[in-house]
Amino acid sequence: MLLRLEFLFEQACHSLEDDSDWDARQSLATLLEILEVLSRGDVKAEVHKELERQSIWLGRLENNEDIDRDVLRSEQVKVSESIQQLHGSNTRFGHYLKSNEFITAVRSRSSLPGGLCEFDVPAYHIWLERGADLRQADLSRWYEPLWLLRDAITVSLELTRNSAAAHSLVAETGNYTSNLQPQQIVQMLKITVPREHQVFPAVSGGRHRISIRFLEQPSTEDRAKQYNGDVPFSLVMCSL
Image (cartoon, rainbow, N blue to C red):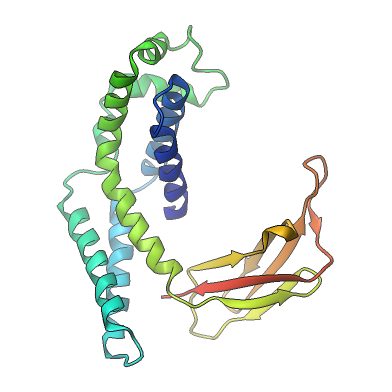
């Protein structure tokens, strides 16, 4: 869920940088996707819970002599501030837009193919015809309460991604398998492949091992297939 929201917020930031009507379409479409994710549960509580767990994990490192104290303190401050800001937010994220008739009208038609045509939602097209300044003001107002959530997600995911060191490995004939320690809990795998290999990973795993297969798809007209050569890659088993 956090990774999906991170992707959507990055997409929103990109489209909000420009003020054409097509960028406004993309910004509003992304906002609707964010609202859809937020409607599936109490995201605020889930992010708060994850940050609290990470705060406890950081606290356990204080007695570790190998830890850089300055870095540890910096991360603790980031997590603590994010927790406090979430705690200070009184409403569920996105709830304020439920009573917005314009957003509701666009949202109700957006899932249909071509559902946002002029004859379907004329109010939407009138909005698009307004000046860029007015459109940007609306988008800024709608997005503003969500940036707090974006910032908290960024802190949480960055801490997760940086929780372990990268290892340089080779997947022989495109395959790699690693056994996990009995008590090892891996939240995320971070896999980096040299661009020139033009392959992508397919990951499967459980409590005892992970398996990575590298696939290639030279043409979008062909099915992806197992890569038969050796693939150098780096792997981070993010665990905290």
